[in-house]
Image 1: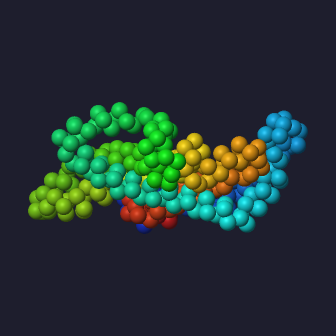
Image 2: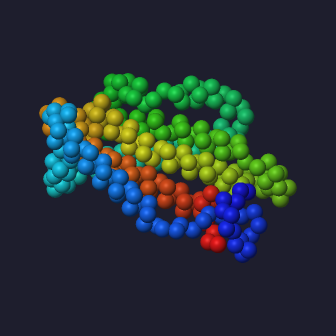
Image 3: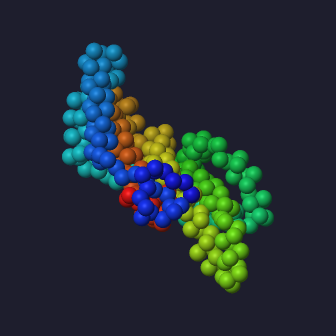
Length: 278
């Protein structure tokens, strides 16, 4: 294992990964807030100068429209539907992706039969199959849900397969020598070994599920914030458009933060998530 800090205490067991204690927990969010204020200031000055005409409303106008949206039932309905589609699609993708990944990683025959298909499908973005999904399912919630599953399940399956294949052979031999069955070996050895790979895939897929949901509404007409953005753009209501884009940015940060927090809690035993105070 790698030692990340040179200030390791003598109480820390030898070989254990050590992370230095944060010296100032307020410094990072403070700098982030400062950067956001500077960006808003640049936005305000650019809009006031009229560099982009009516296509760029001022930051203050957009913030005012954002506050107005918070008081409308339609906004909350669309936001709730977008989050529900993204989370449901992510959950289905997780179950499907982990099952496929375990099968491919634990069986050479299945891996040889499916790997070429998965490698072929991997570079194809979900937006390419969007017209087909609209033609089959129409501009509906199920269409958006299927599109999210297509966009997320494949990556989770590939990462799970890599994690299963990376299982320590010594640990597997030890499990066999102790008489563990296939199911118990999978539960106690293989899945914990693949856990960091699955965690990384879920952390990447969480904001991706939100993006695909919005694309399904923006270009495919599915209900949600994506369709609201399209309607605002078509009506020339740019303040509402930018306010909705800001909402999506906030939702993306929330998705990313929750995914990282869940990953840290589930994989608290892994060296990459352990923190030892010197």
